[in-house]
Length: 89
Image 1 (cartoon, rainbow, N blue to C red):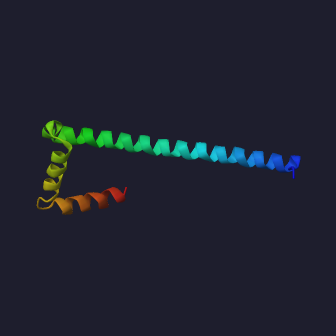
Image 2 (cartoon, rainbow, N blue to C red):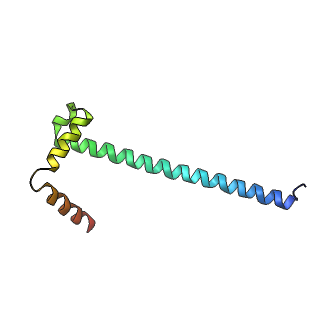
Image 3 (cartoon, one colour):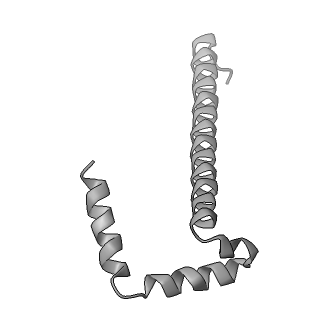
């Protein structure tokens, strides 16, 4: 049974809207990925500026270094205090 012109028109509109939705979702994912990439680069640059020795380290060495720093006395409290202060902005 053939579809009426009205049904065809509605199906075409549905297809167009689905394509628009896909485009918008892709755009959102790309923007989120760019924001994450920017954030990672920015924080990596800060890490290298504060601790120049990490420039010559491999990824696992940097991770071990940061874990060791996080275990220093007062590190956890400082991080929690910083989070509380940032949350209040």
